Image 1 (cartoon, helix red, strand yellow):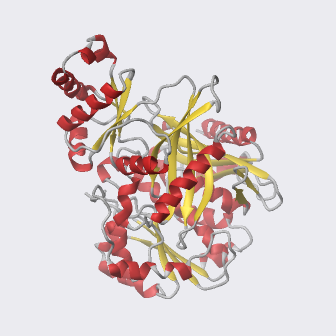
Image 2 (cartoon, rainbow, N blue to C red; image 1 turned 90 degrees about the horizontal axis):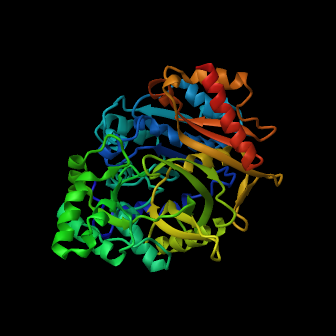
Image 3 (cartoon, rainbow, N blue to C red; image 1 turned 45 degrees about the horizontal axis):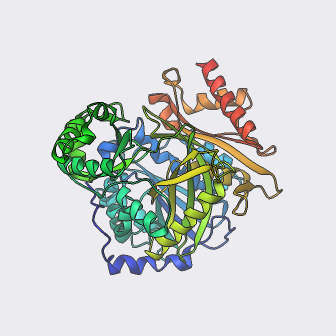
Length: 512
């Protein structure tokens, strides 16, 4: 287990010395850079592996950073991409063909692919560290003066790898991971004055969880449900719902404190889990390993789940990247399924402003690279503004909204406009998209990446660089085994993006 629950400590001087190089190496992704550059991409999901296994096909999620190949548009950039298992050549060719303004063969000559040939349930970074010969082969190809490493999320494993390779890590210092946990997020919200649901401190036993849940219920006696969150859960898979109605009917709130805690402790065994394979016995063990908080469930007739994404560059400056309305599913709408860009006009600039304040707070604490903030928006037409916003959590890593936005930038070469929260091409055309990691049906199993291309090309749904609309795909390696695919549909309006998305689904359904 990766320990990220303790408060931040002083980082190692050796690692900090490496990190100082980033100030001279870093270039904005929007910049056409003709200088020498080497980028090592290690798309390891260095997360709690038992939690990660709740997501079907998660070992294929290493493909989600293949949009990093966009860096090869710069003619003197070399890129190394490491995976657990070798990438299918047609998947690599697909991304290279998407690169605008440069022959795919020129980009391919500057791309090196490495694999550990290890499909076990370990983080990719750990697999690399366990293979010194492969590590040495990679190290010999790196030029220390202009090489750096990028990753999906940063942990002590990624820091150790950067130290062994003697190159800086363009990612968060692992000593700061606390600020991306559920409890750390709540602390930052409080410091920034960002509204967020009432909740508890972090606890590590079921008995203590019953105590803090009782405290929360006593403060908020109107609550109908309470969310129980593993401190390091992700994609909503680490959440569970405590239904208070049976306790309300038994008039537990009017009983003594001891009886109330006892009733809540018993009720924890009947938690409603968002992951269909989760059990209380397993969840209780994770409480001991990861810690847990209790948080008020935000009720509302019309609710949405917007998010904002930002970036803290090596100079400590905060850049706003995007806003999204997230598509959530699962038993109680807690699990991330996809998103649409941009977020609703009625609140996107408000969440952007709060996200920027949070980013500046994180920058002061020494954070680096991408971060995201998730919100809940409840429509209350009787008040102004009509949408009540509450922050839910901070993600100090790349997430489900990262790769669709990278796809948009790669395919259109446009820019995000902070003033109105829209994305424009160089010709001034606004762009919109709908994206999902979870386009999944049993009938899609057995489809190869080449089959997908045949189907989409036949129906002319692939991204058309001349018209600037169409579909782009990721997680193609996941398709044959799990019938699961990632899709970003780009249009000149939200309606066109939805239409393209639905057309892709219809096309796949007809073909299978």
